Image (cartoon, rainbow over all chains, first blue to last red):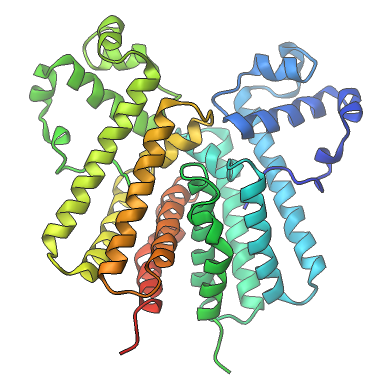
Amino acid sequence: MITKPAETAELATESATERASGRPRDRILLVARDLFYERGVRAVGVDEIAAAAGTNKMTLYRHFASKDLLVAECLREFARQSEAEWDRLAAAYPGDSRAQLTAWLTKMTDHIVADGGRGCALANAAVELAEKDHPARKVIEEVKRAQRNRLVKLCEAAALTEPEFLADELFLLLEGARVSAQSVGADGPAARLVRMGEAIIASHTPRT
Amino acid sequence: MITKPAETAELATESATERASGRPRDRILLVARDLFYERGVRAVGVDEIAAAAGTNKMTLYRHFASKDLLVAECLREFARQSEAEWDRLAAAYPGDSRAQLTAWLTKMTDHIVADGGRGCALANAAVELAEKDHPARKVIEEVKRAQRNRLVKLCEAAALTEPEFLADELFLLLEGARVSAQSVGADGPAARLVRMGEAIIASHTPRT
C-alpha cells in the first residue's frame, strides 16, 4: 500500500528552492527516496545520491551509517506517507468504513497509473533485497503487516463477513496489481482493480 | 506464473556430474538462472557466474554477448519451464479445464512455499530492471501476456462467466501472493491463495 510520494506528503511539497536550502540530511533522504523508487535500491549508489543532493559521500555517511540504513530510512518515509494517506481517507469519510474502502481502492488505482508503473516501494525493495538480514527487511515486514491489519480493522468496522479473509484478498489483489503494472503495464489486469475489489467486497456483504 | 525450476524440468534433472560435464553454455545458463533467481539479477555479476559454472568470463561472453542478454535467456528458460508445467496440468486432467484450474492453484501455492519465498522470476526481474529498454523486459512482457491468455482460454473452456475478468482476478491474486511472500512470508495472505481462487471461480460459475 506504499506508493510514490503524493503531492500531499510533507516532504514532497517542498519547492525546489526549499529543497536546495534544506538541511543536508533532509536533502539526502528526499533524493535517495526518489532515486531508489524510480530505479531500484541496487541500481543507485551513494555517490550518485550525494551528488544529486548537492553534498558529498562523507556528509551522507555522517547522517546514515551505511547505504543499507539509508534504504531502511527511505522505506520508513514511504510508510509515513502511506499512514498519512489512510488518515486522510478516514477524515474524508468519517465513520463510513465502507466508503473508505471504496475510496482506498480508487486511490490505489490512481497511484498505479500515476507512479509510472513502479508499484509499491516496499514490495519492490523486498524483491531486491533477498538477503534476510538486511536492515530494510524488518521495516518492510512491519509496515506490510501494519497495512494488512489496518485493512482487517476497516473490513471489521464495515461489518463485512470474514473480515480477515476479505482483507487478505484485497491485500493480494493490490499487491498483484502493483507488481503486474511493472511487467504488463498499468493498463493490463491492474486497470480492473476497483471492479475486482468491489466484487469481492460485495461477496462479503451480509444479506439483509 | 513462472517459478523456480521444478524437478521435472529438463535442465534441472541433470545430476551434478552431468552438469559438470555439460557444455559450457548449458552450465553457464543453469548457474546464472539459479543465482539470478535466488539473489536477484542485479546482485549477481558475470565473474561470479563464470566461476560457479567452472569457466571464465571470456567463455561466458562468447556465448552471451552481454549480461543483459544472459538475463533475458535465463528468463526464457523459466518461461519454458512454466509452459511445460501448464502442459503437464493439461495432460493430468485431459478435457477437464475446471480441474486444471484447481490443480493450477494448488501447484502455484506449492511453488510459493517451496521456492524459499522468492516468488516469480519474471515479475522479480521486472521490478529490478526499471529501464524500459532492457532486452529482458520484452521477454517478461511477452511471457506474462501469454500466461494471462492461457488462463483466459482455460476459464473459457471451463465455461465460467466473464472469463477475461476472472482470468485477470486470478492473475492478480497469484502475482500478489508471489510478491507478498517476499515481504510478509509464504505463511501470510499468500497461504490462502487456493481458497481465494476457488471462491472467485465459484462466483463465476453459472447457476444451473
